[in-house]
Image 1 (cartoon, one colour):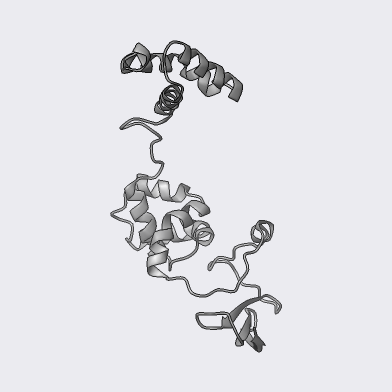
Image 2: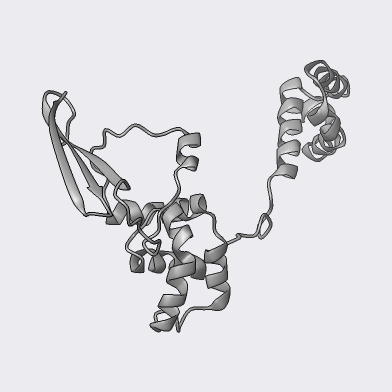
Length: 213
C-alpha cells in the first residue's frame, strides 16, 4: 500500500484534482503533483492516475457519442445510384442529382427506395460522396498510372461542371481536350504522349502525338 493510501483513496484524490491538472500549465501541473506527493502518493502514480482520470472523462462510454449522420440504407442507395449513373466522380454526381433522380423514379428504379435514405443521399456534399464511395471505387476501378498533376483548389473551383443535359454550343470553338501518357506501369524512360481535342460544334477531332520522358 503506497504511502498508507489504498487504491480507492488514491483514485479519489486524483479525481479531485483532475480538472485543475487538465487546465493547468506545466508549472501548475507540477504543483498539483507536489500536493499529492505530500499526502503519501508516489509522483509517477499521481501522474498516471491524473492522466487516466482526465482521459476517462473525454472518452465516450458505450452507446454514447455522435450519432451517424448517414445510415446504412443511405450508404447502400449511394452505391446503387453511383453504378446506375455510370460511376461518376462526386462533384459530377452531386450536380446531376436533379436530372437523374426524377428519371430513375419515372423508370421505376427507385420504387423500393426509402424516402429518408434518398433525402440523406441528396443532402451529401460532393466531398462526402467521394469519401463514402472510396472503397467501392477502389474495388471497381483499380487506379492506374497517372502523370496528371493535381490542380490548385482555385483552378478546380473556377471550372464549371458541364452536365450531359446541358446544351452544347452551336458555334465552333468549344472543345474538350485530354492527354494520355502511354508509359505502361512506369514513367521511366521514353514513351509517347497523345493529346486529343474534340470541337463539339463540328465534331472535329484533332490528335497530336509527341515523345515524352
